[in-house]
Amino acid sequence: MRERADAPAAPRARGRGRLADYAPYVLTVGAVWLGWQILLQPVIERAPPEIAVRAASGSPTVLRRAAEAEFVAGQEANDARRYANAASLARDALHRAPFDVRALRIVGLTEARAGREAAADDILTLAGNWSLRDDPAHAWLVEHRLRRGDYASAFAHADTLVRRREDIRPQVFRLFTVAATQDANRALPEIAALLDARPPWRQSYLDSLYGTVEGLQVAASLAVMLQRGKAPLTNVELAQFYMHLLDKGQVPALRMVRARLNRPARGAVSNGGFDDETAPQPFQWRLGQEAGAIVEIVPDEVRPADPALRIEYDGYSSVLFAEQLLFLSPGRYRLTAEARAEAGEPGQRLVWSVTCSPGERRVLAAAALPRSASVWTPVSAEFTVPGDCSGQWLRLESSGGDRRAPTVAWIDRVAVNPVQ
Image (cartoon, rainbow, N blue to C red; front, side):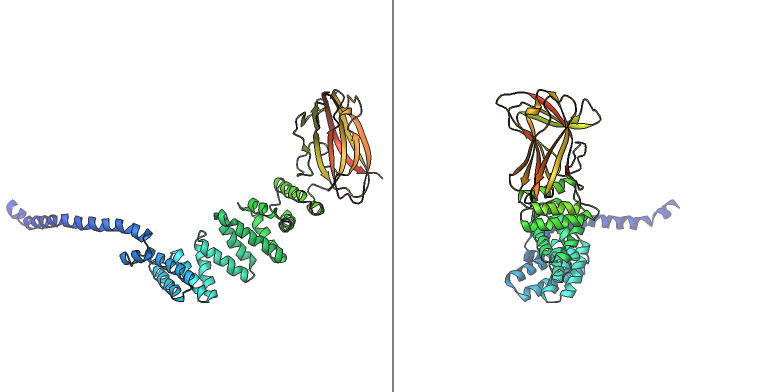
């Protein structure tokens, strides 16, 4: 019974043996095919398109590369046949790989070359939405939307470009500035909307505006618009803008922008109590960093809760201890402050001055503190701002002697008010 039961198993065993005999051949064929695929991949990706097409004519990557090569050749020779070849190859690539963005972009660009701009716009918009990294698609959309006057869409695609590529920022920034200059009513709000989102290129664009008077005018308009938005200019950004206006002699423009922004808030002297750092330069105290003096804002020993300006001076060097810009209308004013001497005779060495800007006409020079004022003592001096003095520098500076005479002085509660 056991022999009869086991008998049918013999043919199956012989069958398995024959399959086993074929196994080495199957594995060899598989190894050869796999090796060919490994060798073929660099050809597909890096070989010249005409060679790659012969080696793997059914590869969507090869077809797309060939389409790109034909499109470039069409541009160089202005050859409609090359554009037609590019379109055909790109469509074949899309048939095999429907989500190949670069192939889709070639189809869109060839449609544009054929004069079918509506179709091109639809196709390239889709390509741009599929990939924020497809620069040629976004570049075409920028140009096309600008020609249609669609600044919002054009600048949105430009934003996509400059977020990724620093090398094309100068060209895009110039595009922004030209549009803002020539069509301010429509272009400026769109640029401000982009800057309001604090893109990574915001500071770079602001820097690009400060080289010319035209750019400074655009910056002034943007500063006013951003002040009403979610991301007004920071104190650092605003100080940079103010200082560029000042350096280029644009004092009337600086005065106008400060008034429109109300930064710092209206008033003659900013941070007269030396306890508020929110005002931007040049309307904030700029402290001297020069040999012969140590100038710092620190808590006063007599009034610990009240910071004040402390000046340690050798009594001999020429030093500008502190300064800030004022915008006073023509008229009569009174400068007031409080001061005390900690050591020496600073009353003979420290003076307040008011000087017109632009220009160097001085309209005030007065001692910064009374002689031997060892306790906090009020100080005042009157001066007149003439009609041709649009800005004024309020300065605390040295009146050095002919020998060293170390002194230490404290200054606080500085103010300038009209004389009624």
